[in-house]
Length: 315
Image 1: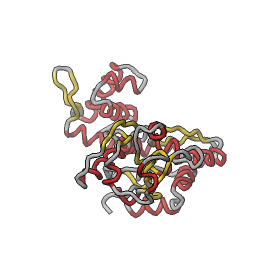
Image 2: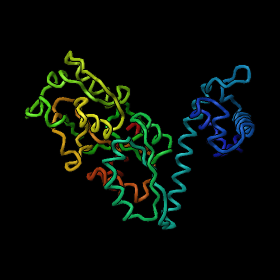
Image 3: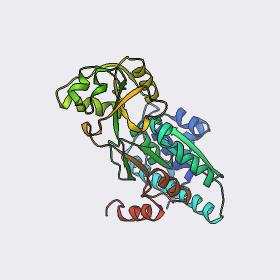
Image 4: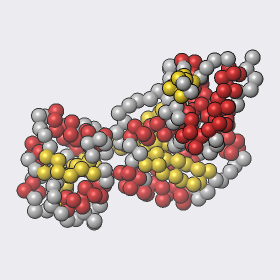
């Protein structure tokens, strides 16, 4: 009979897995000592009667098969424990709270500025926290509970524990100095762009990969002269005549970017959609769907609840 498994022990097991099975890193993340973590895991193994961690010469090499199964159950249990606290806070009518949003630099800088300003006025007691990451890391942060929701464009991997809510199409524009040879063209094709030096996104980023793969699918090799992760940096280099660039249209400012020629090239690239991600099992405090609707207007509280109910894993 299992009597003494604690949420604290489950958190320690989860953190060990997150920290690539490094006890020191797990202890630091949990603000406790390594011997304390080691002792609690040993007590948990003793209580369950199985080894959770695979060890070799006093070094943890991974999770055992039962360890992986217990970790999956621990993730669910810890998620429900978080939900219990949220439910209690909701029924105590607490005005405060915290909303952690995992997102990319692009959306933090452009997409979320107005929604966050509006949300702060509506919910002055809620503390907003932004965590910038690449698209795959955004999903991991949401899945682990380190972020409440994710805002991204490119979602390359689907996860059964996450709900993905599509928003608006993210358009793309070709930008260049006003005197560039392509500046007089109303429509351009990929071969036209490939003839000129290109300032682009880092090829390791999903957005950069999509642009590069689109050229290569047509047998073209873009002349990438500078790569960056920041749209503002790319615009600055284009304004100096170093090259032309393809960037999301939402990163353009009609006033600040008047010195650039802008041509819509959305049709030339795969369709991209702003996507809101959240855990399927999360308890929705009222301000969470309120924020989501500011970013993706079709998703109000009832629509999100309906989607969560109709798309549960296994249904």
